[in-house]
Image 1 (cartoon, one colour):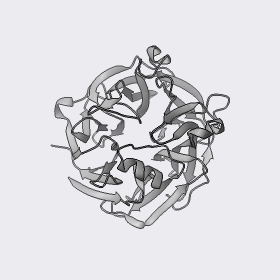
Image 2: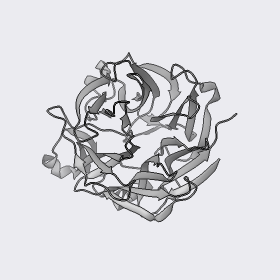
Image 3: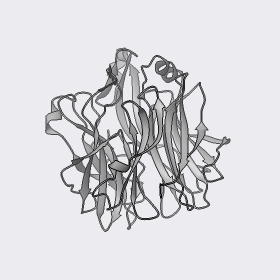
Image 4: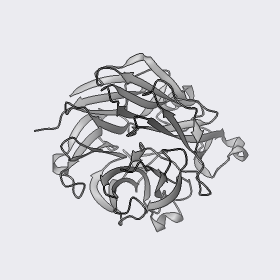
Length: 376
């Protein structure tokens, strides 16, 4: 395994990477970068992912992910709100589409300024947050230039969805985005929304998973939130859902997200209806899915109990089961749970690039990758 620092700066909290391999073999990585407020909170082991002083950056590698040129760094999403969880995808027409989550963050004394239901209240940091919606941008020159950030309108449906995943494309060009509701007073519900016009407009939300017990309290039900989706073809979609059922790890409360095992569901009608979500036995927060060159499916995921790690597991039967007895540990030994969010791509030579964020001894969050090969 080869570990590569993609971006590290002690003056920024860098997290939530996503990547695509471009037609010429170059690699583009998108990630979130937040400023001093987030840096200082992290140093006190009180990390926040809600910060108005945050932006989405992209950086490129011209040698298939072996190194990254910091001179190529671009800030492409900087608006009056905070931004979070970018996901970048290369569409079949060579257009790049970037999705990011827009967050409003206020001082608690400014609660009346919130434009949406409360997502989080952090008394320790003096902040209160709400989800504004999803922001979409396009690049038609492989990442050299980008369209202005545009917060999508859900055509009469609630637009205050959170997301983490890259957008996926079906055979007919329809785009699917996995999203979830994220409110402080109830557990999360996972959905699919879709675009029929290459990402300009989004509509037709359909429910993947919910837990009725969670309608009264986030602590009484399972929160189905960050959901990896994969097109299996012919209208079949697989979803691997983060399912938070506990909010403590290493005896400390996790103010941003929880822990639990991954659940799995399938759709046979292009994501409009789903099978009952079932536990996979994989403990992870959250997952990413990749169809490998050999047809098998790779799941990479963060592991937020000690030893805090980045892990991977393979399905040899189109997602029906997972070879958990052959789980691969890509990196371990982080001394704090606020790390992970791996996303993977496979090069033409078969090597896999997995990007994630990590924590150093100074509590700096930074973007790293590992280039690795599957065991024979």
